[in-house]
View (cartoon, rainbow, N blue to C red):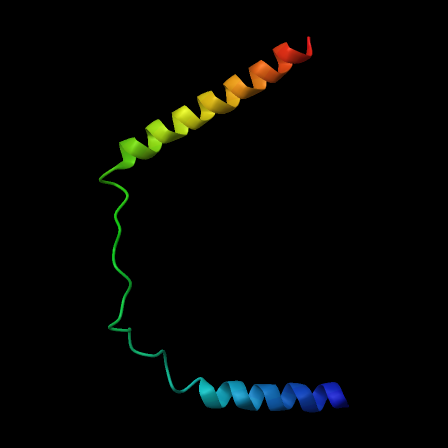
Amino acid sequence: MVTFIYSFIMLAIQSASAGQGPPPPSQNRPPHFPIDDNLWILIVLGILFGAYILFKRNRSINKAS
């Protein structure tokens, strides 16, 4: 019985708020930072980081042998 009352109240609240519609878009949007302009920098950094990880792993394997 409690579940039925809870469901009925939630349905009533939801149907009352559904008629309002979405809020208008905000005028205070965050600044736009495009990454497409400098994508090559991200690729180079990824390659360098991958080479660092491989070098570090190779050095630790050779040190153990």
